[in-house]
Amino acid sequence: MTNTYIAPGKAGVGFNDLIRDIKLGVYACGAFGGQTMLENFSFTAGWGYMIRDGQVAELVKDVVLAGNLFQTLDRIDHIAGDFTWNQMGGGCGKGGQFPLPVTEGAPHVRIEEALIGGDV
Amino acid sequence: MIDRLLETARRKVDGADALWRREEQTAVAFESGRLKAAGISEEAGLNLRVLSQGRMGVAGTTAAKPDPEALLERARASAELGEAVDLAFPKAGAASLPPIPTYFDRTANASLDDLIALGRMLVERLARPDCQINVSVEREVDETAVGNTAGARSEYRGTGIVVTADVTRIAGDDVLMVYDHYVGADMPSDGDLEALIRSIETRLSAALTIVTPPDGSLPVVFTPAGLAAVVLPLEQALSGKTVLQGSSPLAGKVGAVMFDERLSIIDDPLTPGRPASRPVDDECVPSRATGLVERGAVGRFVYDLETAARAKTQSTGNGRRGIFGKPHIGYTNVLFRIGDGMGGRHGVPRPTPDLGGGLIADLDDGLIVDDLIGVGQGNVISGAFSHPVGLAYRVQRGEVTGRVKDAAVAGNAYDLLKRIGGVGTDGRWLGSRWSPSLLLEGVSVARR
Image 1 (tube, rainbow over the protein chains, first blue to last red):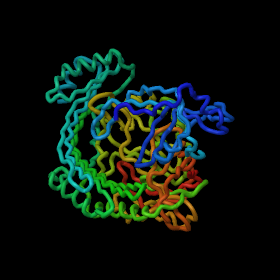
Image 2 (cartoon, one colour; image 1 turned 180 degrees about the vertical axis):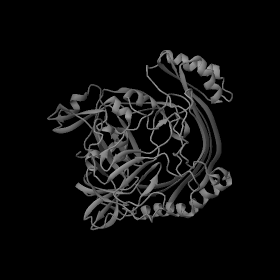
Image 3 (cartoon, chains in turn orange, purple; image 1 turned 90 degrees about the vertical axis):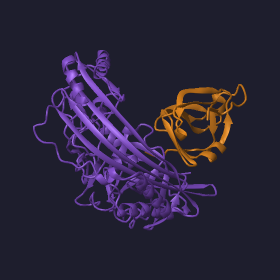
Image 4 (cartoon, rainbow over the protein chains, first blue to last red; image 1 turned 30 degrees about the vertical axis):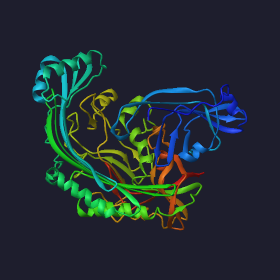
């Protein structure tokens, strides 16, 4: 892979448009790390907020998303137009090619349903 | 080599220690049942640390013929910008070093053909018409010399061998992978290889049926492999470095009972037959066992020379260093000892890998967790974990009913280890950790 990204949705659609009709949700920001194993994945957000009645609410920690990659991608129901590149300067190590420089990018993306953590 | 280097250092800086290590690796890899790669690699290098005007500097080289003067000059230059530390190097040991066998002729003398034959045998034994088999065999032979300007000096040779096997089965949109390995300083015995094969076959055949995961607060059997999520926070919290940094939740708790009173955890660099065992650490501190957790109470934190100096305590002999960079804290062999003689004893042949280690007979509904996805990401030291399952089985009315997918388990390692519901009879080595399966209660299980 080289530059891998999710293409932006309609220009002018912003983050607030994505959360306006969410009664209860999570806004996952940043990345602690992630791992895929076959078709399953685990992803830990750097930090997160609850979304309540269309508004960003309290800060929450230990936000871990889990699930099946393909099903989760299939559950994307809105994509904003606010595309940015994620300037992580990472390297891909697959097949001994480390440190092949790779970048990725995305706009804000809304997943209608995802498994988040469990009670701790 | 290091004697000449230390001699030069003695004249030019206030103190120094050095490590020279040569490693020869022979690796064989089978992919999808066929020999994919076989090769030998060798690396040797020298790491030097100096103390100059109260500051610490380091330099390393992998040059075939290192120039001691140039290496010393680089270390001294880095000390100008280095951290101030009041480091005391261990003196020449009066007592003789603990005798520990680290070098096994059988391992060192195994030819490339021997290693290929070992891999091929596993490929043939594990072959199934609907599965892909990957096997790797890696043998290492190393030599280490370590010493300092205070007069301590040691050298030793070591061997190690790692045999891994994984079986992947793709059926429709379901992908299943079952993995196991053997790690030792000596070659695996026939019994070790049989145990490896049976472990994979047992877990594979129990995984062929997929069942609905349970939901709620449930008893969960963590296999020795599955325990990683529970052990990792403890390993981080018991490191003297996190205690110094103030991030360890166990800081200030030495002597306090924080866990089940049957639980003891030991770091033991003197365990026979393990590749992580050695007579001295990488800072020439003689090896000894450290009680990390003793009958449920926090025992000792592990330190290298630098963190010990900063914490005004003694190094526990847990210094580890590479060719480049300064020494850091590293565990050696981490052993779980639970109760009196419970969980089997390390050193004896591995028992038949019965899924769940004999802990499921009384479980009405629960899980066996063998692999979790994403262990180590997130705020590990807090003890809180939450991971989707990689490989897990459902237990109903005392029996394994099948594999579960699309489930996640969550809990807090410190809380879960306050009460151990049961200890398996399946104690085994997994890398450098020895543990049985543990039954932990009140683990949160979520499903989609």
